[in-house]
Length: 378
Ligand code: GYE
Image (cartoon, rainbow, N blue to C red):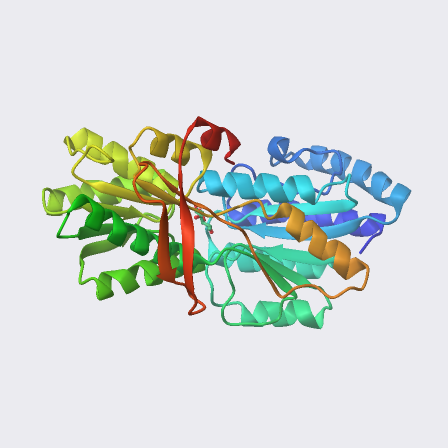
């Protein structure tokens, strides 16, 4: 839909979606073309109308703007902030895109509603980062019936194939790599017993499912003791709360904590610090994390996180590329995997070998974090 009227409609509906998603920052419609992502906030009705009028003028002037609705998971982590920034800067006005951004605040029902609103608006494309991996078939059928191509980024949709392309990470490999690294690390250190606590991500998200499945393969094969696994919902607060409760139940009984993202690790570390539990390269508890955002890698450099398995959130350019190809009538790859290194604090092991999720034996390097690595991170 590339007409001024559609922009008017779009902005009005996006404004109503703000309430639907109950979101705070950085929730907004991107319909007004000049509006910068980080600055957009819910506005008064009068402001919204003024912005919409401007947007309509812009759209009418160029006539060729592609409208894209993006239903983002939320704003729960550093990873998510980087993902939002990446998509917003790639799907920009300069690149011919009018992006409708909805922050769904980790609420699956709100996310379905956001997608339905995009369908009603008649956007040209819908981008979804699915909070959970199931429950999608009906709404994707509706998008399909309306002739709107859906692009999925980051997490996967596992109960529908009605989308044109997916770009993201192989989460099971991340979990397998964490297991392979821990196996090699404890062998090197002469640690004979693994008593692990897991702080998992949002239950039912493909990131949680894959990381748990991959690591559990090693728990089983190595006969490690996985004492408990509770969700911290990918947030720092969640990680801290779960660790505080673990410390009440299992203090002195564990020597490994697996946090399924960096923000959970920050919370878990704060809780261990407060309880006087030593952790990291010089401590009693080995800390494993995922994401490898800047703040996470700083903690690896400081020796507070032993190993951090990168998940790359910079999917905006791939997403733009997919849209451009579709616009040109070209075929697109069904799946695009992000390249992701594994980071460690100590200069001891150089690589890990494991059988990946495609059944292939791979040997992958372990990158020792230094300041240059931190400076280059997202
Ligand atoms: O690991 C976490 C975020 O879906 C891969 O979601 C993403 C995960 C990421 O909240 O930090």
